[in-house]
Image (cartoon, rainbow, N blue to C red; front, top):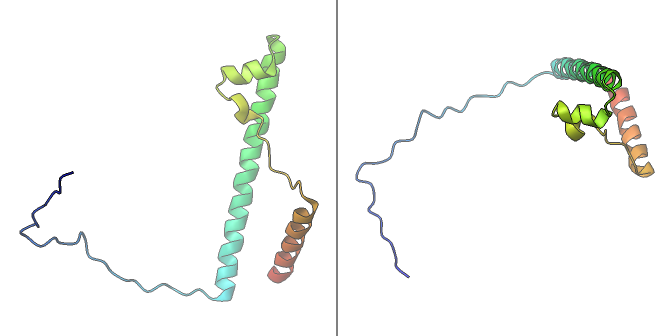
Length: 113
C-alpha cells in the first residue's frame, strides 16, 4: 500500500460569495395564523384539483376500455400509467392510530378558533 502526499495550495482558498447572516423576521401570532390558513387553503385547492384530474382520467380510461373492448388494466398500461392509476390511498388500519389522529385534528381545530 502506498501513501499519497498532496501539495498544499500555494494561494489561500477564497470562500465563494459573501456569507451574510440575515435576521429572521418574527411574525406575530395573528400573522402566522393567517399564513398557515392561506397555506392550508392552497394545499386543499391543489389536492382537490389533482383529485378532479384523476377522476377525469379514470372516466376516460373506462370509456376507452369499454368502447374498444379492452381491459382497464390494458388501457392503463398503454397510457404508461401501470399501477399508478390505482392510487391506493393510505388508510388508518390501526384503530388506535386512527383515534389519536382524529383527536389531534380536533385539538388543532379548537386551537384555531
